[in-house]
Image (cartoon, rainbow, N blue to C red):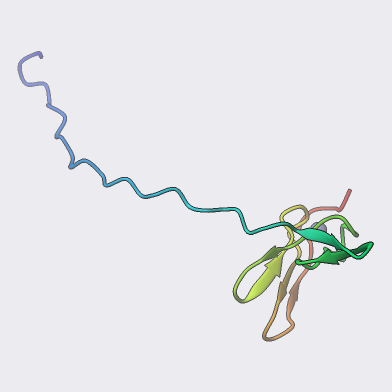
Length: 82
Ligand SMILES: [Zn+2]
């Protein structure tokens, strides 16, 4: 290393977090010839587009539509539903 050059300070090795389990089970199952959905579908994108289920809200990752469970407040879609 050249004289006067700053040496990179070694940072403490970060503890590796265990991988998050993103699998939340099937979005739907067929029971007795009927589709039983475990998640709400997006009213903007139509059936087949399931919304992410959060503890306080449901969110569509496709158009950005969010619906709060407690207040029933709705944040409209950011993007046009295709
Ligand atoms: Zn949507």
